[in-house]
Image 1: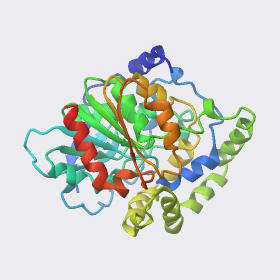
Image 2: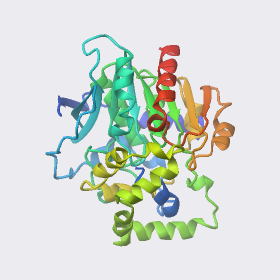
Image 3: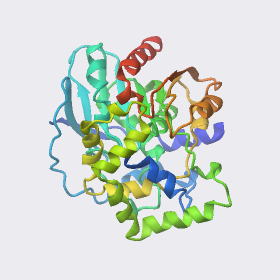
Image 4: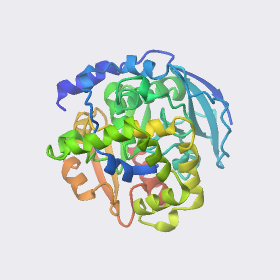
Length: 370
C-alpha cells in the first residue's frame, strides 16, 4: 500500500466525537483454522469501504445477552464497560495510582484473544506508574459480537474498523494520547489507529505481528480458487459452525496454544479458560468464520512504513506461526522501526509466556518515546 493508500485510510477513519459512553462494572481458537480456511472468496477492496458506515451497519442487531456475567477481577485490575456506537465493549484497567497524572498504555490482543490475555501485564505496568487499559475489540472477549452476515463480507470485522474503535477508545475513554502495545493481528489495528490519528498515538509496539501469510497478495494464484471455495463452504453452510465447534473445546484450545508457546508450561488451565470461555458466547462462531476469510486489506509492511510514530518490534524466536527471519527481513529496515528485539525460546504470545521479559521492554519503549 503506497502513501496515497494510507491517506485514503486516514480519511476513512476520521472519528466522530463522543463515540464512547462509559460506566464502571465489574484464541487463538484458531490460528490453525485460519491457515486451513484461506482467503476470502469475495474480495471487497478497502477503498470501497466507508468505515464509519460499515461499523454503524455492524450493529443493527446487537448480541441479545447484554447482562454479561462478570469474570473474576485480576489483582490490581478492574473490569469496566463502555459503549461504542451502540455496542457493549469490555475493557480492563489497572487500579494503581488512580487519580494521578500518568502516561497511558493501551494493550491490544490478537485473534481469538481478549483483555485477559494481558492479565500478567496490566497490573504490573500499573504498579510501575502507568495508566493501563486492555480492551476487548469488537467481536472478541466479552464485547458485543454483531452478526457479520447482515453486511458485506469483512466489513464488520477488519483492521480499519478496529483501528477506528481504538481511536475512539483513546479519545473518549483513556482521555489522553497513548502508547499502543499490540499482539499478533492486533498490531495491524494499532497501526491503523496510529495512521488515522497521529495526535492520539505516541508509539506502537508490536509483539509477533501477523505477517498475513494468507493475504491475497501472498497466496499462489493457482491455489486461490480452491481456498476460496473452501472458505465459502465454511461461511455459507453448516460445516462452518461444525468446524468451529470442533476447535472450541478445552483440550483442542490447549493443544493449539501449546503449539504457539515456546514454554509449554505457560499453557495453564487458567489461560485456556481465558481464551475459551468468551469464545463460546453467542455470536462468536460468526465472528470466527468472518475473520478467517479476511485475506484482503492492508499488509503489515505497508502500515509500518506509513506509521507517523515510532514502531518497536518484539518477536519470540520460537513462534511457529510468524517467522522471525521473514519478519526481520520485511520490517527491520523500515524508517519508523526504532528497534527489533528477539526473545530466544519464546513463542507467539510473549506478553503471556514471558511477561518478565516483555514488561520491562514495554516500559523502556514508553519511557524513550514519551
